[in-house]
Length: 253
Image (cartoon, rainbow, N blue to C red; front, side, top):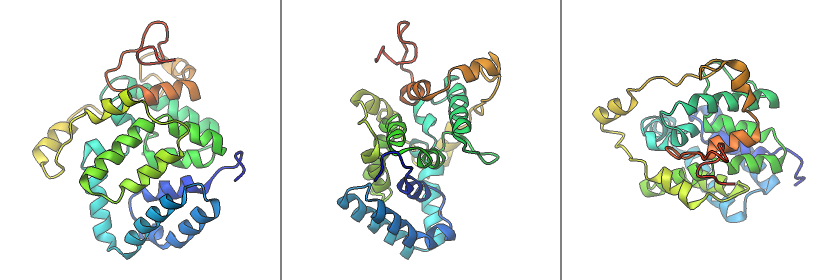
């Protein structure tokens, strides 16, 4: 494949991490054709993904939707919002949202009303519009989050694990061990424990946009771009940037 061309593989993986709808199930043959034509994933990965697609195709839509909600909507440790695993409740999360929105806008991706920019399927949609080399580099930024989610899904015996393994294989860089460990160290909550879930989700809504950090739109946009975004994506929760390299936790180059 031409490394300067965008790829449908990212769009397929984005669709598979979206809420299951009949339209998505009906498009499975097209997804399989796109994966085979691009051959961006290794043959064993495509075979594993094909099995997952067959499972979706054969499943009851209501059951598939219920499973999705239990996994990704009611289990915070499996949240598909990238910055949930990076910044948590930190005020840095709002600025990270601003930077990511600015990147999308610069790349010509329009967000729908109510969408949050760090939603993984949306991030993958953006990656699908970029040249392959750039898309791989972008995907490498939250590689530690993807690896952590894959491991948590493996422990649950969830077939969604394969999607995250495929994403990890497409990333330009493997996650740093300490970044992965930081994400995996976060506590997991039983999705059936409604009392615990209510307690966890009782927090202030994330605010982002011009003035979200009290410094105005110019400041918010000034830190955007691929380099700044990479730092925010990799900024493990509670990690402290150094003075010499404020965009990198622990002074990482």
